[in-house]
Image (cartoon, rainbow, N blue to C red):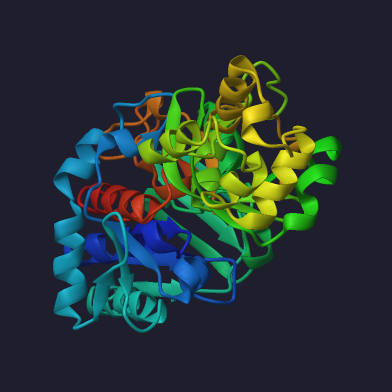
Length: 394
């Protein structure tokens, strides 16, 4: 027996629940399927357990894609203010942390419960854990075969996410469905992920694990001014997570450039000490953490009085701080990545509805699509916006 629905949504994460609730509130009979046994687990672990659920400064420029204008329509029609209204209607307390990032005051589970409540109000039916074995389409109807039954619907929404954090259920299922229906996949790779040092750099700075610095990082057109964090394997922190989406593994021609003295007065302070008898490493310790300043100075043979430098050598020592070129040996992989870059090619999707232009009734939303946000709540806003876009028409 095939149980009939109007809409089947595969993937009960942020985008999937949002889409299911919107479709159900239109009077559609909706089935929401997920293979994992815990609901919204990626929401739960996000933002240190408090879920950075949106960013009030969301703009299309905060997203990466092979089709950079694709996200504009959905983001314009469902804004951060729209999601904030939903949050407030459920009396969830929240606060702005930095740079427009909004977090739950108490727990990320508040967002999960809100989405679950919205789905229940829309009479969405749930099947989880429920593993999908095959998806077929015949006469404009999708047939979904699972380990607990077979279901059919005229609309099928794929909201299965990317490959990040496989320990909580991430899988390539959505990409396989796209390929089954002849949709191109932009090769996925880890994004918003820590980077590993090459052996030489790790030997020089690996023992400074846990040390944080304010820096400006740049690579391939991306530029961010936030903290960087030295680790026992390489480098992390908000600025590095951001730039990891721009750096490509194996691209030795485009290293990551790090300005360790990004504030205008920092280079000035060093220049003012040009003629002093103070040692360079001690002057640098007034600007950067002492352990890093000492080690940097030793590595670059700068442990000597400033007045013993030539003018050129002193200028070069400051320039080296402003243009540290780091060539990572790789990323720390999907286990440490927050999101997946790449995914279903959006050139064959409607930017208004998320429907495949070549397969009527088939939709792709959220992280499975080739739209990846910067760090700071942007990826959740894409989940909400793309989920609503599909839910309004599926």
